[in-house]
Image (tube, rainbow, N blue to C red; front, top):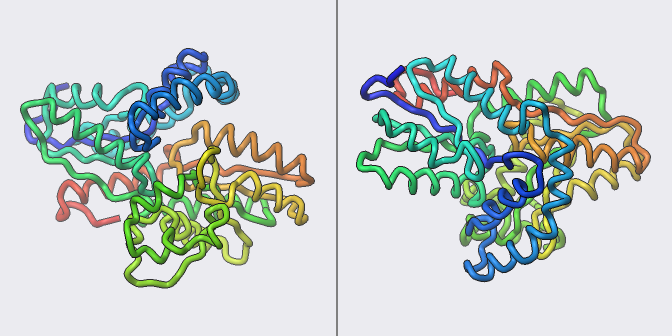
Length: 359
């Protein structure tokens, strides 16, 4: 069915996934992902030497094995969950055209834009499906979107929805889900595992004067631990650490009295990263006598490799091997009705503030 003139379109921006868990597809995905200047900030020649000469040859087989552990008969869990979100929003917003676009892999940003421009919208709402802003996720997705749009003669108005963690519905939906899991599982401790970032990336986004996060906010600088420092001038929307700790505090309020820790996963060697690490934190909790551990991954709204393999499988194995008795990883929001209801209301408000109440 052709889109009506003057319609609004929505593009849900996500990271992406290999075409399959076969090594050649994983290698192609890693090469595209790690060649992004916003992911590895080295100059192009050095970046290509590192990516194609070192990282991809050494990581492909290990990464492929991890993808095989979570792959389903229907394909990539990330793609499946992303399409469910797309379909759920399309049902709630029948007058809008809703598309999924992956920064790396398919359906690509270029494919999404080419499809949109066959019947150009008057307004395009870009929704980076990353709860917390970073250059390696939000910025690169939006940059790819605008670059692809610039190839066409007509440029619709573009509105980028603020980071999901700034939306009340994100904390409400995730907090209520967390409360249900705590009540059913009965954990002794709650572990919030956020996606790791190099400290250099965080500092570059914050700029100068950030005293609530990266600039002077690390616990002695060792491991990138975060010590919040009160400063009303702190540019919180730009500080990744501040955003993550604010999310953890907001979610912990839904389960008052339950001890919790904040840690960072998916860390790589070679540079200083935000910390402490999820792996080391899980080990330490087990060694301290915690027997029932609940993990939540608020950096993701779709279950994917990082939540299903790295945490639900990998961290579970480590925690139980170190003496823990029970471990549970709470699923992401995925296509939860309350979450999609709230996000749809927010998109209506972005389209026309007079049409809907801000969520």
